[in-house]
Length: 299
Length: 299
Image (cartoon, rainbow over all chains, first blue to last red; front, side):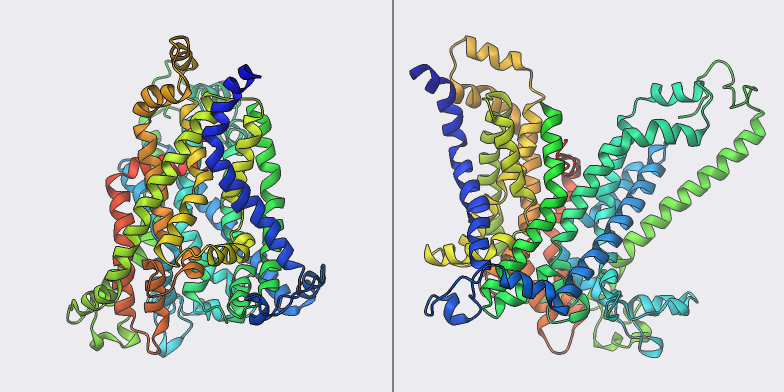
């Protein structure tokens, strides 16, 4: 008994503060949030505990998923994530591919591509709101004015003020900020492929395309998966950028994270909690298999 | 990359020797290279467009308000916007430092302890514990926000800096643990075994062997925590107000609050708000990238 404590005691004690914090603030609160989400806690009086709250089970979830407004948020989330993922992965891959070859000033290019990552979404939102101004023709500023100046007038559009696709305009600054990150991931991947492996492929008479197809792409798959998970979960949680470019009340750019904020601000805690739980489920579907796979590989 | 060092001409797919006539090869090489640099420079141009807008607009006065002058340099350079932005943001800037510095140091220290135990003083089930901690990094905080607000209110934790320090420590634990664990896994087991044989306990081993060689990953973790806490907007919006909140919140109020939008002031403000993280990025870029890489779970 004493021996067992000697072996297991110290590591557990050292981990204890963090374990308690994680148990309470991650898992405990997820449970508490779910508890709130199945109540009729929709008013300020109930939120502050002055009025009674009763359990309504999954009524809030049913109402949310049935409402046209929340469906619009979910569609927006899918559109935004699709554009964000494709944009960052394609640009990040191309930049890494260009920089993999010996290039003069590689450090400069890398630093420039990566720097937006150090800036907050709120700060970049300030300038992107100006760039994505929906005014056109004489009153145009921002990108619409730039399009006129270079003779591409037909590209002028109302950006995030389009009801159906407005949300994809907000994915542009997101791509601007995170393509460099994906580039850094892919570049590390390219550099991790031993030159002998490519040489061997070429010696066997493989064309450059086949070397990519059968040697390089398979080696990069784990990196692409990491990038997909990281960018994907960031995208599903997107809030800052949308809040700083658009407004929470704007129907065209709302996503579940924004709905959650709006519900909370009007003291509709039950709906806010239900939206939080829905977001958690969406993220967990994407992330949990990945975590389990990573965990298995390490054993 | 090139086949120059290959003693015999590399055969192409059909097995014929590749045409190595120097003039043609060189020409092809140059065209390819020119295209590569052109593509890289186009990337730089696209990344820097918002930076140009930010700088130029922040020096513009009321005389440049016309949309036709949107992309022009200021007619008269003025620093009025900068001083207005400083007046509006400086209290929040100091508060952000007060919040970010303790939050980074405490989270880094906890992460270092966890990383050490989970990688080098391991026990059965350590991998599962690690995965459970890691999940905390991916959850959308919306899924814990409502009970979190209630707990902080019940516990009487003041909104603003104290709340935010606590939150950034708690939710920083997964990423700091991850980075340290990946780093400590590169330390040879023999080093720790030797200490064990000499009779050093766990704390002693941590203190005199692990801690001294952890400086590089402390730098990586501190930068990561500093940047993400500095740039945070979500917790700021829920747990502080414009009177006691960090600079992201103050900037968002500055940019979205006024009825009449003054882009000059908000862009100067965006630059102020980004300066600390940009300086860190410029001076310690190498470590910044190190942190990004560790963020990809596999490390």
